[in-house]
Image (cartoon, rainbow, N blue to C red; front, side):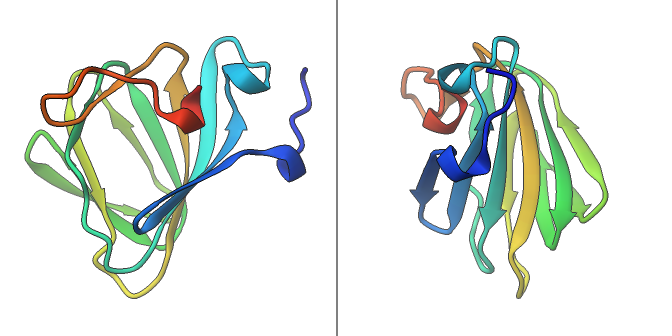
Length: 124
């Protein structure tokens, strides 16, 4: 299906963050999952590893992305590429929502702590 209407896009909630699936295998995509992420003000990051490269395109607000211990300020209009295998944490210490579009190759997985790798539900 080439057109994936937003009205039917699945939405997932975590404490301080929401994820709206725009494109994914469950919606007909074969190569990339794409989602909108909104991180609420004051939300700390949760460190996790990714098994494939992930790209964030910031739309509005400001967030701090920590990649393998290096902190990067991510602001509306900028893009951030996170390499495969990196330890990533995305936080919003500011007063406003941070909003971005994320692109993650199909088959990419996340590793939290010592848990088994898994595909996030918004990328499935």
